[in-house]
Length: 366
Image 1: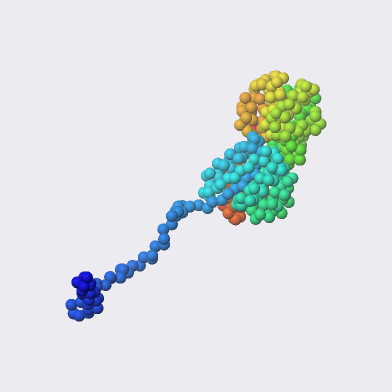
Image 2: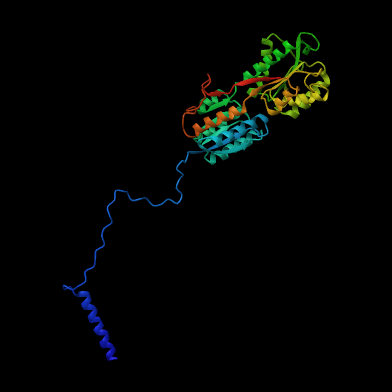
């Protein structure tokens, strides 16, 4: 035991001498040299999710559509999707179907505001409700862009918004010109040879600015071209833009007036197709060159409408360019979402009213 204790004490003494000794023979540790100087800054910590070098700005469009199953509006929706995908700005579309119900669309607007979208694009179910829609957007600090279904000018002025659409009267004027041209070239269209055109006009919706203007100006322009016009129904036939409604009402009209109708104006191609279906049912307008044939003139130049013209069932239509409207909506709404002047860098100019951009119509005939 003592031997072990002696050895332990000896080891402690040796260790003490090594630790404290500083003579000529003491080991001197080699200092570590400092890092070489460099002009490069110290790199920041690595980012686990670095942005791509070509990252673009991103915005969300809240888009309120009055009714998805409207044929013309379907072409505008497709164009909005197309041009949003092609944009240099990353655009997310949050599109809502109002299903022709203004109360539903009001609720959809509330949801889009809660989502804090960057711009609200509005195709109002009821243009008369546009002020309320605009006021909600303004209160939320979100810019609004209206299209196709035109609100009163005061709505845009009070909310600082803009409307993208056509000039409603222009389609009616073109319809009147198309009928006058047909009447001049084809005296046989005057079935009773009385020098007066007995006609029927199918209206989209009472109070809708497009429907009212197309109805009014188609007749006025035909008269301005020297035609005598007589509406055998006295009032426009309201068919709410719908093919089935136009067909059923035209069938009833034919039951009392077959052989007396010499022309039909329709506010859109969908209603014109319904009218043609009714005429086909009694042997009229079955093909080009048919002896039993009545000029039917629509608006929109939908694919189905153009096919009816090509097969000789419809006389003419007026093209409302859905692709051009969708392109304008995307360009202008993008600027609004980014807080830029809405027409900056675009091909568009304000109309004389100072609150709208107008997409031109064009006549289409056999």
